[in-house]
Amino acid sequence: MLMAHPALLRKLVGEYEALQAVQAELGDGEPRGRLIDVACALCISTGTCDVDAALIAAYHQLPGAQVYDDSLLAP
Image 1 (cartoon, one colour):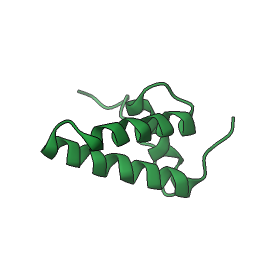
Image 2: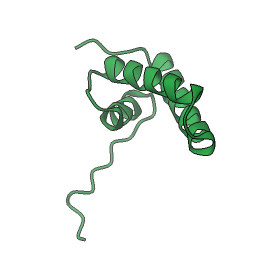
Image 3: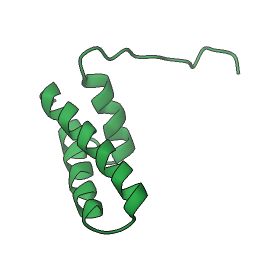
Image 4: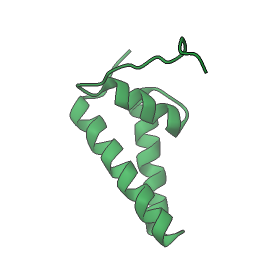
């Protein structure tokens, strides 16, 4: 599978998070259209169909990512 360059992923994740914060403050409008575009780019770059899965995949592909598995911890 092809993998996106870490610099591209870092840029897309940062832009998505910034636009999401702006959208939360402003509501609908121009940031929403750009947010959708960036979400689609994240999905394409990570080979996923969902923006949440794309963000998780991007975080795991970025340098310094540490996989944390809590499935064995008691509730």
